[in-house]
Each structure stands twice: as C-alpha cells, then as structure tokens.
Length: 337
Ligand code: 13P
Ligand code: SF4
Image 1 (cartoon, rainbow, N blue to C red):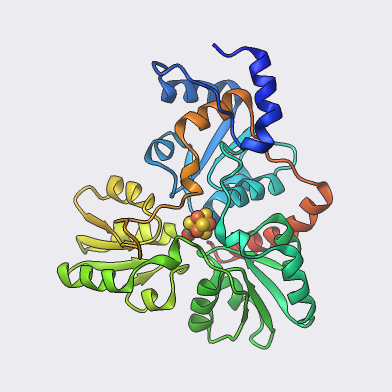
Image 2: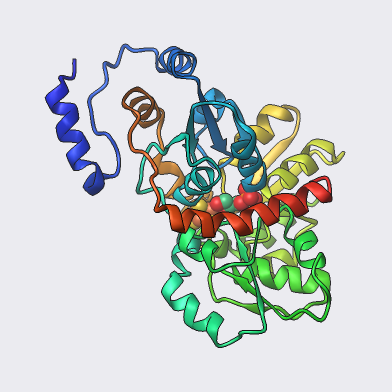
C-alpha cells in the first residue's frame, strides 16, 4: 500500500516527472477500479481516438478534437479526466474553470502545438495587423489568446467560409491543414510554418506500393498529412470523418493515413472490414503519436484516485483563450457540426 508521505512526495515531484509514479498491485482489476472511481467522484473520462485501446474502452466519450471540446463544454461531471494531450485538457479547463480537469501524464504535449510559441507568433501577427487569426485547436492557451477564432479539422472549412472572401486571414499553426483549406476554399490564407510530427512522416513510396498490392483499398487521410499524401487520398477528413467514412462506405479495405490508435474503433465498429495502417518513413509499420501514448491505464487509474496531475491556469489567460473557442463552438452549432 502507498502511504500518505509517499503521495506528498509524489506531489512535490509531479512538476518534474509529469505523472504519479506509484506501484500498483498487479492483481487489481483496473477497469473495475476506474468504473468505481468514476461513480464515487462523478468523473467523466473523455478520450481521443489516438489513445491506447484499453483507455478507449473505459472512456465515457471518445471523439475528435471538436467532439471532445463540445462534450467538455456540456458535461455536468465534477471532474473531467482527459485522456488525450495537454492542449485538449487545457481547452476543457478553459471551458470549465470551476471543474477539476485531470491529465494522466502532464508530459503529453504536441509537436504541432510546440511549433507555435506565442511570443514568436505575436511578432508575426503584429506584422499583419489587418489579418484575422484562425488557429487550429492544437495550440497552447497562449496561442488561443492571440487568435480570433479556433477551428478543428472537422470545422476548419466552414469556419474559414464563414468569413467574407476579402478578409485577410492568418492560419496557424498547421501549414498542411492550412494549405488543404486554402485549396478547398480558394482562399490565400497566410500560413504559419508548423506541422505534426506524426502526420508529416508518412511515406509516399510505401503507400503507393501498398495501393498497388491492394488495388481495391481506399486511402483515407487526415488533413494534417503533407500535400503529396493527400493527393493520393480517396477521402480526407478529421478522425471522426475518417471513422464515419469507413463505416458507411461499401469498400471492404482501407489504408489509413493517420495515427494508428483510430484503427481500434474502426475495427470494433466494422469487424468485417480490413484496415491497414499507412506506413511512415522509418522502420515502423504504423504511426503512433509518442505524446498520446504517454497515457496508460495505470496512469489513468492513479490520476483518478489521487486527482493529480491537475490542469491549472491563470484566469486572465483563460478568459482571453475562451473567446475564440466560444466563437468556434457558436459557428459549429450554427452549421449543425
Ligand atoms: P482530430 O481528432 O480533431 O481530427 O485531430 C487529430 C489530431 O492530431 C489530434 O491531435
Ligand atoms: Fe500533436 Fe500530432 Fe500527436 Fe496530434 S498526433 S497530438 S497533432 S503530435
């Protein structure tokens, strides 16, 4: 058993470590324990599709970034346990200042979010005072506070199209999603030079070979992928979009160009279909996000038991970061997204 001194020590170490590092009795049924904690604490587990299968299976809600932020905005739970990465948990906190928001491992960051440090972005923004800033939700609270509207891959096109055609726009931080939306809408948004380490390393050559080997397979891709990969795709969409396409399209085989965690739901929802992860440009057969995969069932259990690590935020920053998220949620509701 863990004594209280150990927990106090763990709290002190948390900032450095990012997660509670406590041995768990290996005979413990973590699924049953987590269910019990959910009931006792009126907690909700929100999980992204890129989480490991066990976490997806115990979650109360699994979704893409838009669905997760909508769920975070509407929940009446007292504690939100975010099985995802930091910017997602931070968004939940921005929307719920009076609720406790927990993230199993504070080190679960995001390369895309890191590619836009607010201080650097502010200089760029100040050079273009006539531009509105649309930022992809994969960014820090500091970036959100510098933005006019937030978007996700599910609603980016509709959000851009909701602005007058003559309105100059800066799109940050994902240059691939920005270029894709420019192409779809005929706009010429200024793009910040950021990208996701997972989606930019798919191999065009290996995917082309896979397509030749599986001539009836459809390539479905996330818009964070590079243009050369998107050019090969039969369908492009957010993680929810990809899942819905796979569920409803009559095709039996799909090559999936996004983080491999989504294959768990695809396989679960379509047991008679074949899903092949698109290979990256390295020695691995599929593509995992190292940040998303920092969360484990053990860390999820510990974080619910001890209510740590918790997301906290400066109130002034929270209020500034909430405005563009509220705008996104309002536009999405208007379009029934
Ligand atoms: P969506 O789930 O919104 O498509 O985003 C993908 C992603 O990279 C999340 O980090
Ligand atoms: Fe960030 Fe990419 Fe990981 Fe999503 S998959 S959390 S965008 S690094």
